[in-house]
Figure 1 (cartoon, rainbow, N blue to C red):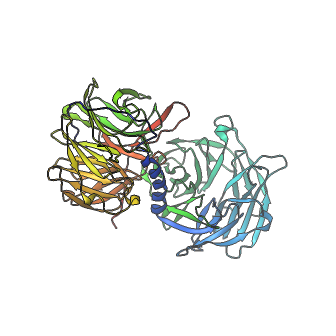
Figure 2: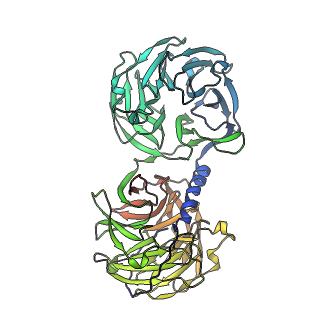
Figure 3: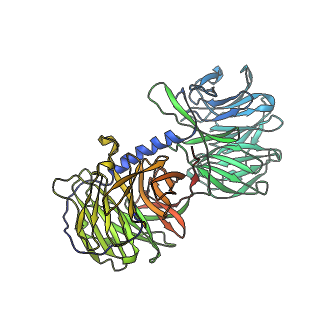
Length: 621
């Protein structure tokens, strides 16, 4: 819902007007939240299948058996999924574990057996067991109770060393049980180092994912604290691995090589070490279908697959997902800051002013954020826009001004205005009403051409208002081509992000339909850009060069054209903090930053995020 490009505009004065209401541009928000789920569900890549129950905690690839094996949580068993099959098959249900939950599992390939952790059902924390089963026949080899009377435990994950010893983490008590190859409890590794920060909040979920390293030690992650530990199982010494990057909310682990580790969680991370895990660095990130929550990782044919603990569906069988992870380089970076209200629709970098400028939706104004500052400062609140919503904005640099779109609060769709303000003094240059009586509109984004004319999209009516540099309404660009599919569903949010191309035309995205249009503002002719790849749920845009365009949304996309935007192709994708919903893009020092519409926090000030986007390549079909 925010775009721009060339940055321009001057002014005259227009009317004001008020009307109370509820939130605007927010029709978009509900749709975007649902769309986030739909997108992630449909593009995870990997394996989706029908299985019993809502939750599957852990899944591993059994290379010799040619199948995935997954713990069924409340089913307290194990199911297999073979290549090409759409439904799992239950292969293990130990009667001694009835009424418990099945959690972490490990395939002990040299001994052709499976190790499976059993725990109590919450809110009980008194039961812990490890079972070992022969792969193929599923004959039980041992079933060992790990808990002791009066102990509060929650066993979670398991790993096996080269001798067949098993190591089980206790997420509640932050300790590790050691079990012999024949099922004898050999002891418990307890160490104060496992608790780096006091208090239940910092240790609510303690030791969790665990792997055995061929150099003879264990790597174990602490979920709440985000710490990674290197544990010598013989001496029981514990070393804190100094990790550059956060591992908070980490879950299951998978060792990809002696130097590379996949960490499932929120998000999923790739971690690397060059000094035998004395130190390490987060080098990649994969979000995937975050509404399901990544809980374990495994490798099949050289690819990392993330099991997601939550299944979805209406009937008894739920759809479960093993998503093939493509890690984006680096970790999520950018700018987080405290700001007024829940929603900031659009943010742009003002290079001359050395600051980000963001529209505050319900504040109906603009805030600035300067380098190194942790809190925004309100710089613009036009009294004629009181009770409205501030949506898209663009910086018209040649004319040293900012253009800001105002809209009605939902459920009203009768107000549309464009304001122009002098950067620095914030003197108003013009305030122009765009709506006409009886019109249903939702103005959203704005761009400026080299002459200073402004173009405002109407997301509800799929049209474009044209406003002169002085603020006069010059006309409205309407074209049946803007509606490629009939019906409100396909046009609930229509024309949205807009940019002006230096070759003299506009590029405009249709959010619900995913269409990209090339519009000649002089002749008002409209051409559909044939895009290879989906732009559905596209929002604000930023032109990086005459051939490269960023489309914020769910997900954020990099689009390229080699023929002056007759055709184009989606060449990159960046997900970022999807629970916040990407809504606009801007460029600072050569890097793309994605503004996220939703802020989070408990007090009056919410934490807002401008994430630096690192686009993962999208393979050409």
